[in-house]
Length: 341
Ligand code: SIN
Image (spheres, rainbow, N blue to C red):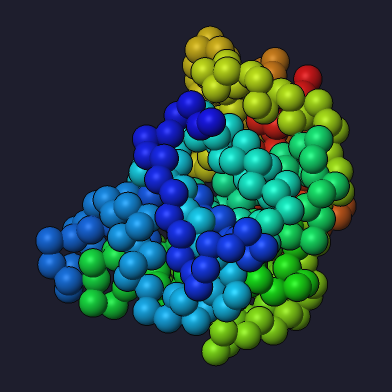
């Protein structure tokens, strides 16, 4: 089924493989949660994406209890450091999520992922899955992205605990849409972003509250999650059927002291299809980056906190990115918009 699979393992954990038991599908893509280091005390010099999902799950004490009456079915669909994520894997992942979510015997899907580009994958799935033709069949289910900041070999590995939290969330009757779970927090695909390079509490939703907390295996919602409204069905076709190598090229360009119009010329000469400008303050942009664009350009802010005021302070023909999107997600949003064009 998965043309880009590097593994195609099927594992079953649970009390029985009886046909009536609900299944939780795990789609494994690598990351630090599957990482290995030479020493159990080295949390920096390790390689992401080394352990198979079978090994990762075997390392989760209390897995059976957390599964309750469910059975776990795990598929290794990639084995990468998520900094190297490409669009072909997004196509595989979207297709795999849809294939399993639509199954009546599947309660929900967990995706194991590296932390570095998790926010982009979460936003991509959040936008694209509602466009799938079968989306109406999975409105009461969730896709939960789970990750870790310590490799699986670490004496302080956080992956096992995060996986138990992901299991609690995916089985929760109110879980919906695409969610990110780590360090006891449930965050929305729209708002989650990585803010720490080392601490285990690595994700934040900025000024937005987290959706919920997981404590002692119980989910306490602060805000009930939901799927995004149905997107243009053509988006699904475009995402799945446009060869990854032909997806639009969208770049992030940072505005700051010394920014030069040469960036504009160089990118366009090289064939860029769209640009997200990472502006200063209220998405203001160096004068040398404001002119000369012949491709779609959106503005965002490099500010890490707060949100842009509704009133745009810059009289510019360059529009703001959709409200609330950090630059990494605005880039995905523009990419999807260009795929639809
Ligand atoms: C990765 O993103 O694959 C490596 C880093 C991490 O998972 O924390």
